[in-house]
Amino acid sequence: MKLSKAVSQKILKICDEKNLSINKLATICCVTQSTIQGLIQEKPESPKLATITKICEGLGITLEEFFADPLFDDIERNDK
Image (cartoon, rainbow, N blue to C red; front, side):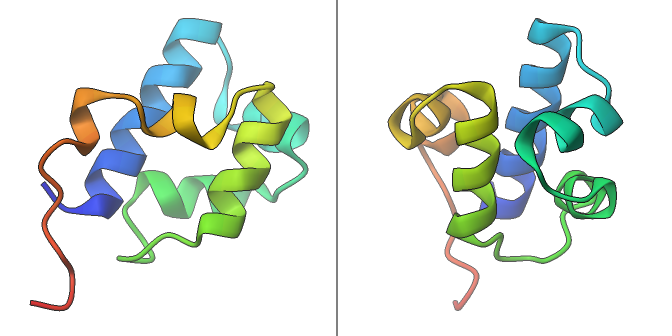
């Protein structure tokens, strides 16, 4: 699985678990709704770690907690 797809699925999973809309997640994390929507639509192909860090800070989780998911076990490199 590509990193962008795994990040997209993880964000949707978190929103579902916490009963958050994309707009509410964006507000909590101090990022634009279009940024969150872009991640969900797998654009950019290589999500920025800084953006994922903001999402984690807004949700009160660590990067380790975000990436500790089987979704990230077999990530395909984008530069192959």
